[in-house]
Image 1 (cartoon, helix red, strand yellow):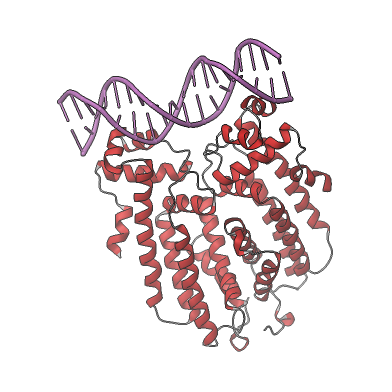
Image 2 (image 1 turned 90 degrees about the vertical axis):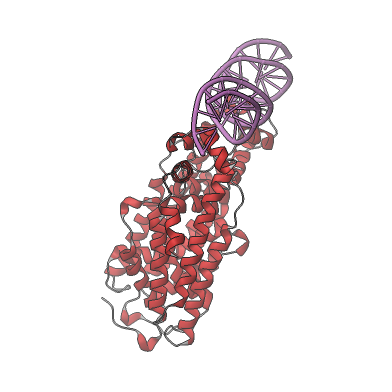
Length: 209
Length: 209
DNA sequence: GTCTATACAATGATAGAC
DNA sequence: GTCTATCATTGTATAGAC
């Protein structure tokens, strides 16, 4: 997994690598539609034909970038399933590893998010839905296990899953749109703690300060 | 307030009104940058010079649209402050009225959200930040009152505010990106109930099913 | 206020030399 | 693999008639 991960972080210092890095930055800042190939190649310090040689088109470099991100997400998400501990601990670790991934690739996540939640902007279609579904699938599994083991109170598993997803959405959203506010793993853990308060089985409730 | 609100819903059947309605739809579907004036005028059944006559530019029609939305948001948000009841009830009503506003103007909210959370797309700058801040400000006020009255447990007001904002963010996000899943006011109320569980003062906790 | 016709800039993409 | 030079298309915006 480490190998897959670094692929996205350290693009080799080739023309191709610099183009990828540059494209991620510009797409993140201006969105797919508003980005021109001229901007990308200027940021990468190459000329237009170099981009077309390596990626074939504006769509091509976009898809290459999304493909790498997709692989890495899938690896991290699935990896979180093989952990031990209480449901709370496992959920916390799952969120923490996903959030760390977001922090490492803020720009890619911004592009991904803009296209998934926002208008397609004429960007080539890409199955972002699968990412989100997979995230909720794993979270739902962990929540269900917590309910069955008696760690969480009885209740509609879907509702409890969404209740736990809330803090993650909040922190993810604020991190992407307001990085200066410095929401982070600590804040995520703190908000999650509040959410867990509403989920714990009655016999496990602690008095909280 | 009703007068302000209808301005956005029922655009008069003039060329200007049809242009506004058409622009909202196209901007929502394709984003600001990817939208062409040709598309707008074709959807409105008029020709290009008509748009330039009424709004001056692509930016002009965008700003006109955002201006109307802004006014309506402010009116609804502020209106929610003048209500009576327990903190839970007031928060629920506040969320419900804000969510109703979103449902009425899904397309405008999509455009607004895309530009606020996503890349600016070259759209004219607009103080979306103020909307979000105002929303959190009001919510924070209601939460603080709940803490002070002893209805909510003691705790960091900021954290508790975010914890309550979570369900709203989730339902808003899902409604905008997956309207077919039919999240709605009922789901919002249900998820909010779970969140309140984690906030209630110890002496007010009820056993939940 | 609304049309036809068009100006003018910028865009994605390529041919062909090196 | 990378460059210079250029093409075809599409974009915003406008002039001028009605």
